[in-house]
Amino acid sequence: MADIAIQNGVAGEASTATILTLLGRRSIVLVGMMGVGKSSIGRRLAARLGIPFVDADSEIEKAAGMSIAEFFARHGEPSFRSGEARVIARLLESGPQVLATGGGAVMNADTRAAIKAKGVSVWLSADFDVLVRRINKRKNDRPMLQTADPAATLRELLVAREPVYAQSDLTVQSREVPHEAVVTEIVMDLAAFLGGSAPPRDGIGE
Image 1: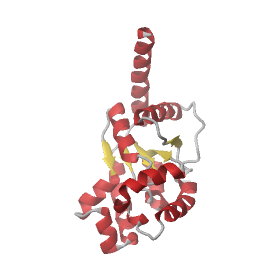
Image 2: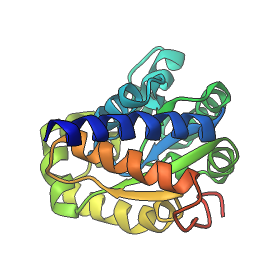
Image 3: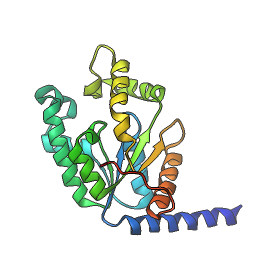
């Protein structure tokens, strides 16, 4: 058993080195709905790979000098989306990194094109029931869900966004397992995709 563990550790290190070599200056860009775990999984993925983790929402809040909820309330969604696109374009100049994006970020065509040019996109997908359970814990932090029926709004957002998310280079299911298990799956898929042994998708910018 010890020999197997050592072999797995060596294989893991080789896989990480391969990913970083093939990634070059590109970013690993996590996309998906609110509540899928982009930030928590992204931090663990960045630590596993030994590269920085950046949360686009946090960077937007720094640039704006206010929370996203406050920005929505003061300036509205169109103004937020415009600023979000600018911040993500700037962040993509600083790879390699793991970049977690907001749920609606890739609905902007310019952002999708920038991610395609300077990143590898990973869609963290999750079942509706999982999302509802997670989001209910932090409903007040979700400007898009400040409606009479948050669950119905969430479903509408999923219907609109999932076809765009599905254009990502890779898709990994976010589910009720330890986050490290999801991170391991992402690392394996990245190694296969970057090494050319996984069938490439059209890309999020298509």
